[in-house]
Image (cartoon, rainbow, N blue to C red; front, side, top):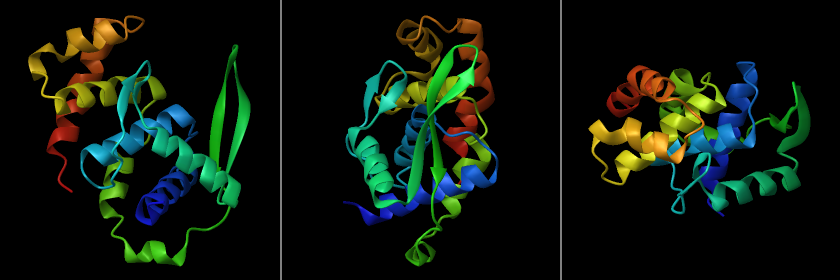
Length: 171
């Protein structure tokens, strides 16, 4: 069990709750991928799935934190036939979190924490492909092939607004 990763995960959950952001499992996975891609946290097993990058380790961490009583994971009705998970902090962060520089985590949260799950799914997928050495000029087409339910216009808009910001973010 990677204690640093667990502390970063707890911080991410607490910070987003303080901001009033509804955090589900998919959004959590994508934000953790942004942190892992920037080498802020070590998550070695990300793979591309339908909703973008997914890590079984991150999923396991959520179950561990829930069992430990550090977080609460609820199944909720978002309305209009949409259901999903909502992750909430259950207790305060460990004092040992103060031993880790969380400024980089806070920068990711500040820049991308309020994005919708759809936006994060598109952005994280594009970053995953780019990290896999795909040419930047083909990202809209490639993301659309993986996510045909999203229009090329939406993908282009999201990448135009957030992709370069992520790549150039100084941590």
